[in-house]
Length: 255
Image 1 (tube, rainbow, N blue to C red):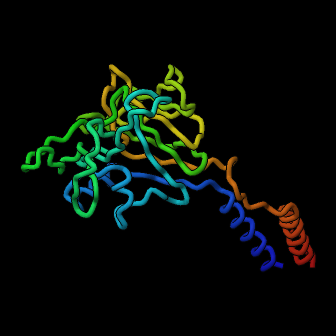
Image 2 (image 1 turned 180 degrees about the vertical axis):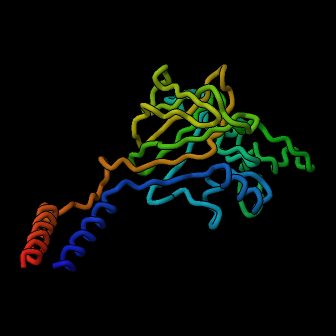
Image 3 (image 1 turned 90 degrees about the vertical axis):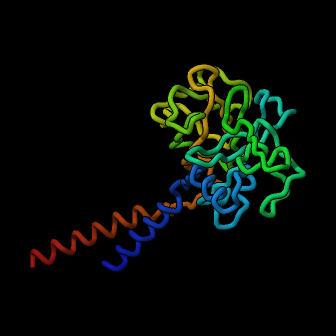
């Protein structure tokens, strides 16, 4: 009976673990530095997360992709490049552009914001703006609905972000309800709903330039496509087995 009880308890533990939400963390700051160290230039989001051993856009079963525009959430006619800036920074956007003719370390095309980008072809590096500043908008898309549980932000000088930023889950416009405060880089995410898409931008005055430095997301358990069901009889079975064990102990004492 003891073995049966332990087996049933173990089964319930496994099922509970299978039903728990997945969580994933992206350390954009570390990933940017690792890419730059390996390739001698800074990369776009797609470049950084295409390199084996340096990172992956899929973590703990959650896939992340990024795009950006410098007009509005709904207008994607002018696209800019999601970009990872090294040196204690993180994920921003390159407002300058992407040079499709440049080649570096086996890559075709290079962000013009990279500190390793040779703009004039003579060893002169003039990287453009590489952080996220209004009206630039960074869109992060996940393969499933997630909640952002932790977000750490740095400012344009790579220091701790303070002030506020905008995060939207609607894909329309930013309004007062989309403004989230920061203190020493930590973003207060109270009230941010789960979604498969999040739009980010900075505020115009208090916090004009930001990088997303680290981010942890957790899968929304209510939207899981393949939940593992708990057999209806198992909890009752455990209660019954526990009761039998209790009765057996009373009989032994009475004897």
